[in-house]
Length: 430
Image 1 (tube, rainbow, N blue to C red):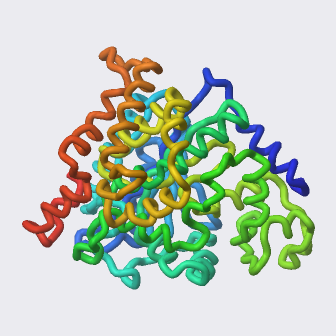
Image 2: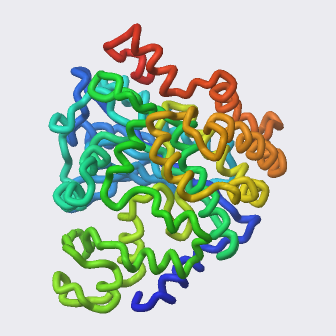
Image 3: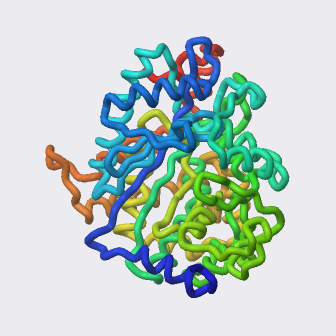
């Protein structure tokens, strides 16, 4: 049972890994459209899932409904608006991460052609209005759809109209976690700007480079808490978790909504909805997964501030963060140690709209990104993880070099094309 702060701390301690066993995990979502350019409904997703069985994927059911697929250590999951997400395996290097993504995308594109579907990999649905998006029978989303808008006005847009890329990284001690969590929290504005890929909303220029990030900043249970900019250790994160409101409790296949109670109430046996039962590790794990902040801790660190993209961010974003957090942490921390919290939070608020031009401590984010990109490259060179052609992981930073040299992100390139093609045909993956 989880009944004390120390129980939560011990849960996080179980995530400690030996440096030699550090892994990398990547999760990324995609929008699916039918031939009429409407978002795919659940029946269409079922057809995709059925076809994916031919590639070795096995279905996972909730009652009689398929809600996910599993193959080895990977899962494909169903999101609220029928976006589909690959939750990748924990792999050794970026070469393996890219191969995993490539194989998945190859399977998906073959099925797309067979079913006459279209795929868009952006941070925000550029076409659909919220009311046009079909839901699905996954039970947890019923509670989320009802409760989330009460605390964040764009929460339903987050659920139904956004897609993100998430990077999962390990820590070898509590101190190592503290350093890594602080760095990736301070780098959120850079991450938003550098990987911005969602400027179009309902076929119009939203006047944001990352509209997805704007939405997540106005989402219940989200944001960048100021305490994340301190030296957060396991005890402090445990306290944060305990005070965080409960969204729902899962009992077998049933989801029970909980109103106005936090996880500490659960630990103290004060949830009438479940006869005052006490939480176990599974309950804690579910609670941690309903904290939608820009970064979060489970038994690894999750970096969640990257817009989905077609291909570039699937390799570039993990490479960028692996080079910094796994191989050049202290030098990176030295730079951000001079940044003020207020200025950082102002940059966080500005980054979705101003992108690389966002000001932070006397430089714009484009200039800071060049500094951190160089540090990441040095870190990846130090790792010296080679592919079959004897090339190290720095090859995956090439696209970020192009962005910073041209001072044009995916979002800006997209807006340039938008002037010529209002029908958005260029957004569909080939």
